Image (cartoon, rainbow, N blue to C red; front, side, top):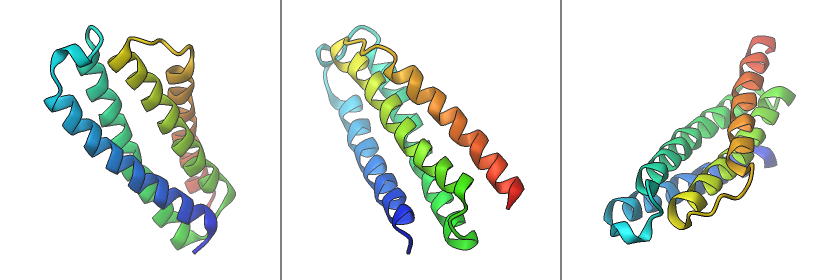
Length: 125
């Protein structure tokens, strides 16, 4: 199995693991652990993280079936980085009220670009 596929599958598994853990914390922690409106923000971040973990698994399967095509590989890598930045940025704001600059918007932009690259990569394959 190519290294990039192993990396993406490992990343997706860890993202899903931390998403389940974050979901449990978001559900059971008392309100004082969250910034104002933070519980809903955390839920949104976890939801995005879980959906993208599944998408990265799908991209990995596609890469195994069709070979590691450049655009599809780039899409998976960009999606992993975007998921990490988006979820981390929103979580910092949700739990501690820290606004870490453009981390979450940058991650969100990377996620959108990853989806576009996936579409183009699939069309070209």
